[in-house]
Length: 266
Image: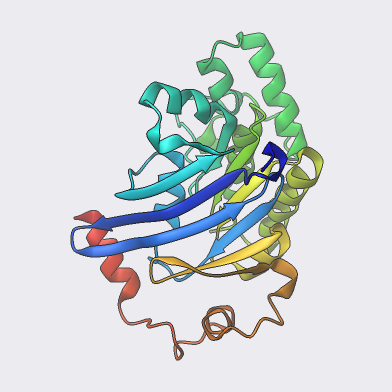
């Protein structure tokens, strides 16, 4: 198999448990270079755990996470950190540093890796303008609205030109108009730069808009993967139950999310 045919991200047999609660139970997922995949599923089914395992924020109990065919879990920590420079992550809450100005937040990765302040500031301003924010580089995060903060977070995510980007609930807490703005920026990023994207979301409109493929995570593994344009026609019972928001169906909804959240906190 040539490098061009290798998945950019390949998750194999990923398992994670907290105490006696199994969160991931042999999850498999492939994402080809330049493609955008969104993982959907009920709250507490392990979507965030999956993405945090890929990012190295949580250590899985077993399995492999291969990036361009290289198992990152087998690398020494310093090599993992080096390779993470290829990655961008937009966290659900934005996660801006309150004590840093907007431009310093956006350019954080550049400054951390030795880019001089003048160049880092100029790059930050360029990316802020790309997300539709002008002349706010010297403001502090406390001065921003929720939508502005999310766009600043997106600017920081892409400032160092990563070739892999992760989105954790990118439209959570936003009004419908600002959600559409964020979705369109993600689509633009994908089309303009060919970035490989892995997202998790509850927002089915967002998932359909930003994705090439949709993957349903259920019972600790990827139950089904389909092209995003087949969401309305696919007849899988579990997928239909989730998309249609029905409590009754093959997915057992009783206390699942609460039990997993409690297990993680322990």
